[in-house]
Length: 551
Ligand code: PEP
Ligand code: MG
Image (tube, rainbow, N blue to C red; front, side, top):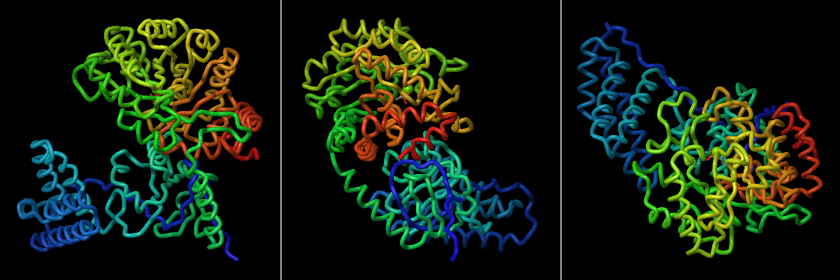
């Protein structure tokens, strides 16, 4: 009897999927400028044939697509065989370019023209460059780069996914994501969590995942089974059905012994508040207010802010909505607030530091929040980002209280705040841990830099030990302690966080169901013993494994 290959990686989410593998082809090298000395007419015919094949393919895809994509694909199908582009290809082949190079240059030249027009046409420039890649791939006889086209459901296997790739994923067809690289906070993992797609990242032995092989992806165990037996698929799918049943519950978060754990939503725009409530969020744990400021070149007026905050509060009468004061700087630069030209902006004047340097911006925001609070039945809490110690905590909470805001707290994102936990907790009404930044600063690993992504792992016991201190200090003072970084959306880690003393978890609303289901399987005693196992591990991976094998 043949043995079945099982490959291990880091699972994201809880889902299970079975389908055939489609590999994401790597980007093509740029065609060289070598002189073409062959038959120009035959070379042009080769290119024209590739253009026609591409045009027909795009048209076929347009027929299957929804109304909006249909229009775009039909337009692209015409562009692929545009006579002006073909004439430009012909001229270039005549001037001694290879067909590949001529097509590449001609499509890129038209792309530049469109880009210069801006607006809708400008947005199509990227599409034209994509057409060039597809024609060059056809001429080389290799697969086109990017997300493969498919009529059937598939498991996408790639090195990693860039934001641009994920934008074109057809979620009706992609059943799971498997990447060789990336970590639990990589773009792939964040996307998978936000749309509820099972994913396995940092997979070791990806060479065995050939195009077309059948695989069973199990995110809970972090495994990809190659050519699984039918019974294995059947039992995994049955488990998946039971899981989906359980995740349909919109009950408030609680452990198996009834210990409540508030499940809240992270939102990035006021309009996301109502959909989060519909997915069972018990409130909002992090309202990132940057969108209001980043979308405009000037500071939004107090009235504009009041309108946005009121919209976010509206679906949560009687519930808590935690609004974060503007977190400008570093990955969210704002010309009128942050210093230009800092060499290390993540270590610069960002978050509360930028607000204290521009108190008029902070005061306007606090005033808008106070007005929104006065007009709403929701329980508005406000917190400051990037706070270093108890003195800074007090600067913020005093200012917020003075404006009439009842509940003012701070985010724990800088390790210093956790090391000074008792003092900080005494100066705040609550603390919310931003594990994305706390991990970045604890591990000294830029959260935007792929080459150090493996350090960006909130499972690292160093990060967990800082959270433990915050948990102990908050419990001793009887104050709430939340987590609003990506870590909260990892069901196993969520249990560990509760074991460390966290009382609420906030995440993108799509992640709530899996976390709710996992919490319900653990008592407080079990959560504490899992936390203890993770704290004594030597590495992030060891902590994760210790918890997953605990029961
Ligand atoms: C965090 O740092 O964990 C956090 C929630 O804030 P942001 O991701 O917006 O920096
Ligand atoms: Mg942060």
